[in-house]
Image (tube, rainbow, N blue to C red; front, side, top):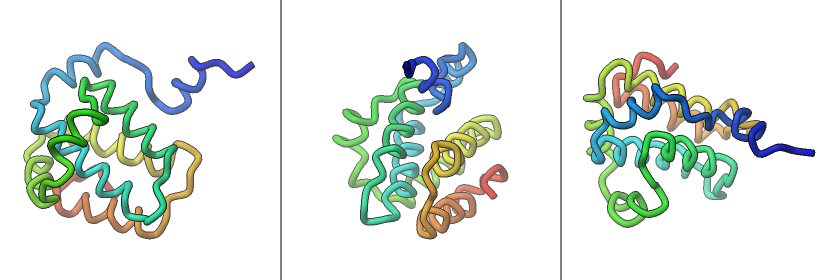
Length: 134
């Protein structure tokens, strides 16, 4: 029988105490900017990928940001360049989490990213000066 615990482990949704403190160190604006950038990469293709969306949802739940309510209401229409600027100002440790979570969305959930996903992923690395996105 398939266990929910194994599924959560497989997709990286483990609630580690360090992640709790990490999430507390981010402002709502920073979390929203990161979510906006995630969705920028996610929406690269015309057909939505639900597995990727669920991954993003889980990652942001871990850091205490509910993308289904806050993001959709407030930040969906904001300019992506503004979000890039906020993500660019993150600390090196925050950029590391951001890059590993974004990489996980593309490469670790069993879905093959499209060429457009990869293009947007690399653009995010350039625009945010994130040394962990390669």
